[in-house]
Image 1 (cartoon, rainbow over the protein chains, first blue to last red):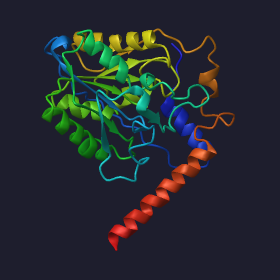
Image 2: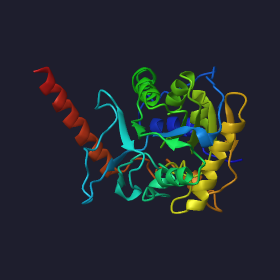
Image 3: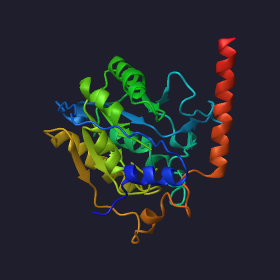
Length: 167
Length: 122
């Protein structure tokens, strides 16, 4: 199957723009793993994304400021799982803008599809909130700060399973 | 994002990650990956195609139910377009990754963050 090798491509691209340092992608040989130990229809499910977007009020105005990597101490934000898809506005700069325009939230943050699966009994329940983490240049921070905070909040809400959608 | 998946998994919460960048998630040691060969920005399916989105999500749920070892990658059979053009043109001079507008917005936010930080220090 043919697909883009992003690690190689990114290095080439930034080198061609004159940067001598390029993004250092995470590399791990050991992989943590825990099997699913109950049916999904009994599980409480959450969604985690790195998509950048703003929640909109009923009048269609943003309820929050745009955020950017490297400018916030804690970079975990929440979205209520019953939030309507039409009140989410993408602020992504990290997609292929020649191919796709981020106008359908469900292509990168499947909030409506999750609500459908809940109604159909595929899931037992949805977590109170979904999580947004900004992509970060620091692997240590992603793991020790943001990831750890998401885990803490998931435990507090008795989450059983997490679906993740990086953008 | 795979690093967050790893933290959750190590903390006892099974995860599945839907990606458009197979190599990045694989390199990071992602516990379970559903790879969808669409342009960046569509990890959960084709825009405005709920049926496709449901099939993509379902594939991840099946992997959650069936995986017995870490690091499994499922390559979904869906294609974005009949032509591989989009893959060839991505991140080229013809189609730069970040637009000038986006770069200007980024610089503005960075400046604002620096000012906030400076205020906090004083």
